[in-house]
Image 1: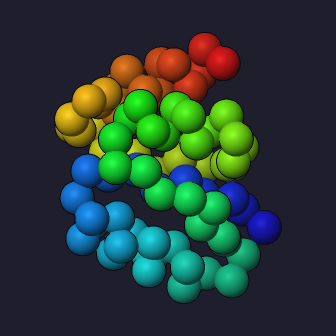
Image 2: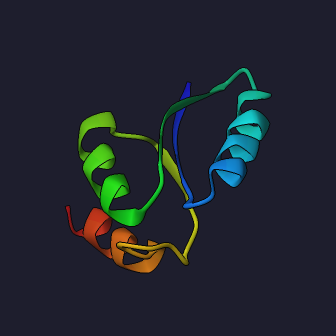
Image 3: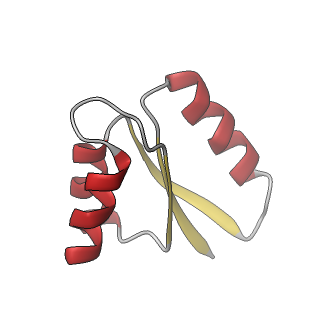
Length: 72
């Protein structure tokens, strides 16, 4: 199974992405986050294989979150 974390500040977009990803039986959504800061936190605990992340978000954007995730 491929473990996916979905990160987007729009609830509707997150829900749409989750529905799309869940249509594949080999992929499981392990979590969702509304901003980059939460994505960094969840990545440490959920250890996803893939992160689908928006780049423009409040609190911490996707670029900064990616830098922090890759550093860890």
